[in-house]
Length: 397
Image (cartoon, rainbow, N blue to C red):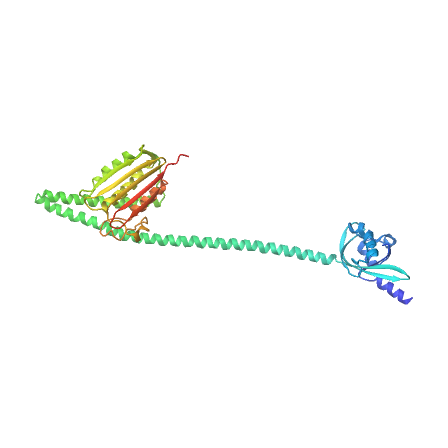
C-alpha cells in the first residue's frame, strides 16, 4: 500500500507529463504535468482515445500505428522515443519528446508515455537560428560594404595614380616645351637680328642683291616663328576642348589645288608638288578647315625633310563612302625605333638634325583627323621617304 502511494506521489509531482493507455489507445491515467501541458482536466481525457492529444495527420493514423504494431511487432516509438508534436485543448500545438514503454500486468498490456516539453528548447533554437541569420546577413552586408569600400579605394588609387601620371606627363611636356621653345625661337630671332643689322650696311652701299637676300631670310624666319606659334595655339585649343568640327560638303579638288599652289611657293629649289585626284566625284562631307590644316602640315614636313630636285606626291581619292588623302615624299624617312612615338606631342625623330620644328604637327594632325572620325597612318623607311595616309568614312545615317 505504501509503495502504491509513493508511486502515485512521484507520478503526480513529476516535472514531465506521464500518460498511460490501454492496448486500444484509451487513456487510463494522466498526471498533472501532462494535464497542464495539454490544457485539459483529467475527466476530459481519461476514457478518451489518446489521439485527441495529437494534431493531424498523426491523429487519424494513430489506430493504424497500433494495429500495425500488434500485427508485425514493428516499433516506431515504443522503446525508441522521438520528437513529435502535441495538440492542446485550444487547438494550438507544441513540440515534445515522447518516450513510450510497454507494460504487462494482470494479463493486461498497457503503454506508458513520458512527455518532455521542448517548447523552450525550440524557442531558444529558433532565436539562435534567427540571430545566426541576422548575424550572417550583417556579415554579408558588412562584407558587401567592405568590398565596395575596397573597390572605391582601388578606383580612387587608380584615379590618383592616373592623375599623378598625367601631372608627370604634363611636367615633362612643359620641360620639353621650354627646352624646344628656347631653341626654336632663338634661331629665327638671331637670324632676324643679324639680317636686319646687315641690311643697314647694305643699304648704305646700295647693295640691292644682299638687301633682298637678307629680307628673304627675315621673311623665312618670321614665317617659321608664325608656324611655331600656330602649332602652340592649335595645341592649346585642342587641350582646352575648344576645337569643334563643322562638317560640310567639301570640294576636295578645289581645296587640294589651293593647298598645292600655296605650298609650292615655299618649296626648295626644283621641289615640285604633284597633285592627282581619283574618283568620279570631288565632294565629300568633312571639316574643310581642319582637313586643310592637316594636309598643309604633312606637305610642310615633306618639303622640310626632302632635298632639292625632288617630287612630293599629293593624292586624294573618293571611292563610295571612303575618302583617302595621301602625302608621299622621298626624304630622310623616319627611323623604325622612332615610329612608335611619332604622334606624341613634342616628339621629333633622331635623324632630324638641325631642321627646325616643334614636334607638335603630327600630334595635331592625328587629333584633328580623330575629331573628324578618321584615321591616320604612316609608312616610312629611313633614307627612303615617308607616306602618310588619312582615311575618312562618310556617315549617311
